[in-house]
Length: 602
Ligand code: SAH
Image (tube, rainbow, N blue to C red; front, side, top):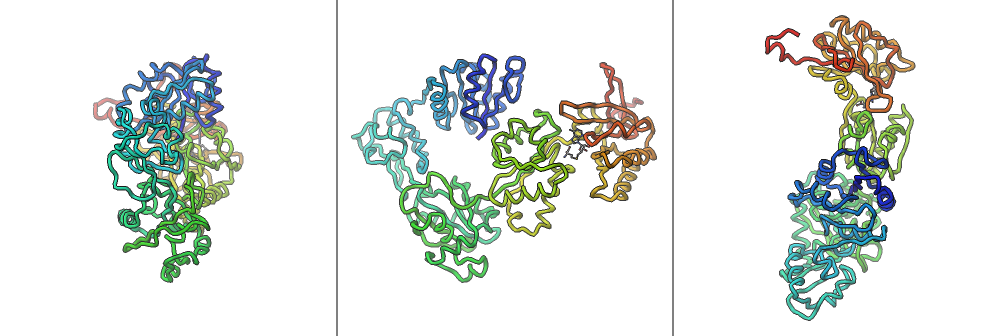
């Protein structure tokens, strides 16, 4: 989960630095003009805090509780969101969990207070009065009846007592043993079996089971979910006792398996065929048919047994529906307080950083980056990401090693990692996106096809250039790369002729490089065949970066020695206009035809 530390004044810097030391992944937002040390500046807390909240970011606001509450007031009504929100006094003396007490805010407040030597102002009634958070069991346990929690807590708070709380192992921390006992209305039960649940019973399930599944390609998720639900019921196994869903790696891109894991709220993990084959002797229902199809005699039982290890055992033999199977294995003893077996489905995020500056990057990019374990990129792009790329394993490549970079990203994702392949601008525009899909198509590596690939777009250079200069792409436009390294020049020339004939606004990517200097003059000549020498041209260099420059000229005067590989060149259509602006420069825009509608000549 992403965390933001928000600070309004320089006096809080020592506290902010201490918080950042404890939460190195957190992004520090500082009020512009008031705070020097931060990752990103903001103008208005009343804009920043609601937007972080809506994105589900954990907020640690180093300011008064009053400021934080007022800023968040308008968005608090939506109870579905509720990420943890805390305020911290600017001298570090108090930490107040404001929102989401039982979604991590109380726990985080205690952690921060310990670190700062401060007081955690916990006000949640159950925690304070009962001394225990009954809805936050220890890792390895789950509350199987969360619907009974509010009723049980209010009854405890009203003075009712537990009947057999003292018998329960400390699934919610030692505090449970201090709850008042002696009554007969409320109970805590800890069992991996199903309970006929009554409102007065809090049922905690130890996560000691692993659910193995198999299914045919394209199996309806509902079929698998129904099979699992009815099988667990017959075997008297509580769904809350399932720690993970496991299967064969060939199924790692099977929607039904992921849907099932999501509905159970547990991770999905996968094993390769040799690992499952080693379970042959322990299978209760080996199948020759399955073996001939996928190379192992049992997927559901084999995967469940592989997960629980040599001293675990089958707790539910294979059950079948028309297209799916499931089985459950149990640990010899104890619970899974973390899932360390098998491999997750890897994912590859094609990430566009936009041209450079951080606030031209989609918020979704930061969210995705927070999830990535590994980044694959040309080093400069990682530098552009700044703090957002901190604490990742970075695999740097030089410019020109595009295929190596894309292969490496796919390999890492196929190993189960969450990989970000970072591109400037948009990852699909003259960047690595297309190459990744090309490698998937021609690569001959099956595991690459099973990787989850997600593209997060970015502002491409032509949009940034048009925005800086006005509205140069206000009417039909096209992009042409002048690099003939991969595309034969005859093809490029044909497109130039077509663009000239179609009177498109044209954006030239890769216009010039040290070795390629004649293409831009040639392109200019071709475009001049279809539009006047006075056509406005925009040279936009290093957009969004410290060295940015945006200048205008005309097609007649376009001098390719003023252009380099960090420049995108926008050539107007015959309709594009350059108009003076107050500061002595020019706006360039391409009219859409409203003037004709209004009967006005431009
Ligand atoms: N994926 C990138 C394009 C990569 S191709 C995007 O969507 O923007 C590289 C070319 O893009 C450069 O030669 C230049 O023409 C253009 N370009 C990329 N970033 C730029 C920037 N910040 N300023 C100006 N041009 C840029």
